[in-house]
Image (cartoon, rainbow, N blue to C red; front, side, top):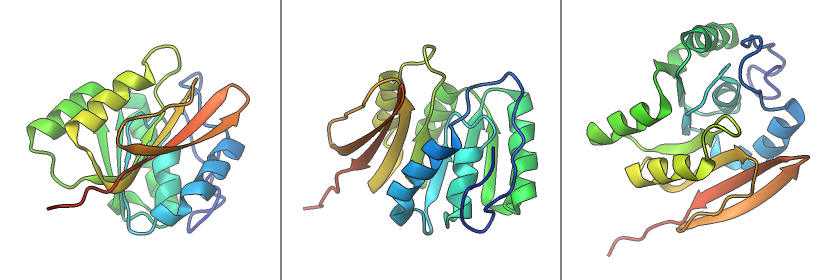
Length: 184
């Protein structure tokens, strides 16, 4: 597993042996090509971070900052080492937390800065993508025109979002762009 493009392109990443399924490089490359326009200066959230490869790829391609959330202490240490290896230590916030707890705490704090790109890759068969979307969208975590990048076992749609779907074998990538809300 490696960073595919950008300032850290080619850097090999550490990952938890026997840990969660990692996004295949060809899948990651394909959907980053589809969302590259949204990376420059973006605030990113990698909610089921694992090795941190999605958030780190976003940073490599121009994101300003990334938050990584994982419930595994081992994965959090791996994310920190991978971020340092890529030279992104100062552009990262790493949280040892359950995804639900992180979303609830974000909401309870009044939110703060919204995210421009949120990567949602929950463990297949354990956490339904619809449950994750309900919590994240309900908390108001995504900026106007922001992207929810969902990796799951099915194509995903959500009210108030324009969707594009890509299929790779049994994996679906759904890129949901939040419709821009106009004041007034």
